[in-house]
Image 1: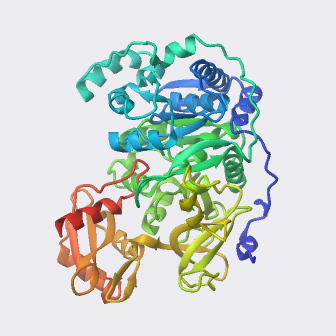
Image 2: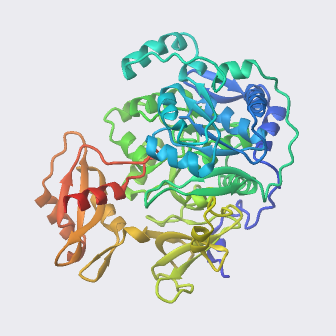
Image 3: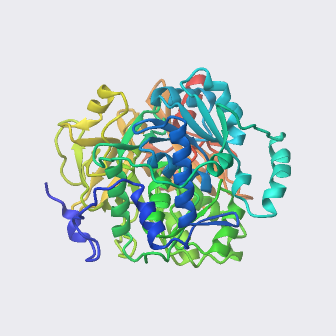
Length: 558
């Protein structure tokens, strides 16, 4: 098929890459051999070298092997961004096991579903989550729980103070004993040797990760990502960010590592490129600003809500953020206003990318060091990634500028959904093109534009209305910090447009004023008929606003 975007590539980005067929853990082996004493992780003042990270991962692998983990077994990892999350990820892979990345914010119901669906018998979790895991243990196949604490990898004196902070914040002192089915992470490492387990991995066939979809449109499904899927997507990332210097970059890890975006563009990229990960266990604006000023990250993958929160802190001008050279924003549309403001403050480049869990996750991005002049676009497909727009009514490729469903193909695309052949079949066009569920169009040059989720499109009085267009207009208003638009039931129009608004501190604006503002910028049928002001909006762990929660609320009201 034609690939007009290839003519846009700068000479530094290849059209095709020869990918190594190797397991994901080879990244860590190579780093430990090449730069053993270089720091791989910075965590709240504590640093781990690549050698320490490698040996700790092997020790955990041997301990897990002693608990019965073997090739193909699923092991759940339920941790925030911390050294143990990285050690656990590679520790499981070194056994030949499959990592089931589990969101620490999951409720018991969500956790029970994921554990039962994956069939995991082992889980590695934070001590604060131990009670939640224990409550669902008997309803799942879980046999062993390995428990760790943030305190385990804090430097002195933070490790001494932490239990008191934990008591204040969570109202309890956690004392968990090492036993037959409950195991302490630190004790497990002390009891094990850093010997490599002989394991034969077939990168294109063997799974590395079961990455569960966010569940924003229904119950989550496990995307089967092979070693080759992850190796190829990380390799693409290195080529896309061609100005990166191997061994010299510092990557800020605010995006959760349990999310596909953080796994690839923070963890796997940092280790493949011998770069330091600067990890923060949760996003706090002041802590993030202090960390950027002190640790001077050069690469900052993020979500729009993170960049918006930083920009709306009145003290941002007091911090030195000039170390930031490149930011790729993902997980949700990046408002143009946010992009321009962040670039002005940092002097670095912030561009929008696009991906989805089923593609490891990145498929598209804008060029970081070539001015595309195209605002509001997700950019162009990455090397070896093919994409086209599938017509909504003809079930065939649509011409330029026609809205349809974005479909993609490439070495980073999953094998399918775990134990769901029917869902897998429905998700592919002609058996090989992944249907993203996103409405988009491509212009004549090859730039792609996301219009909206196929399921989020609003149909009012026969008109197709795309929430993103309205949200872009709202984000341009000086009083608005966050905005999301949904369709709500309407007896006359079928659906009508409602906007949920979070205002900036000290800002005031009325619904009537916003309606008038929108009328000046949008066709009448697109103007929100209702505005609701909130202190915050429901979000996923990675910062994606959950329209589904708001729609469910509206259904209950009606």
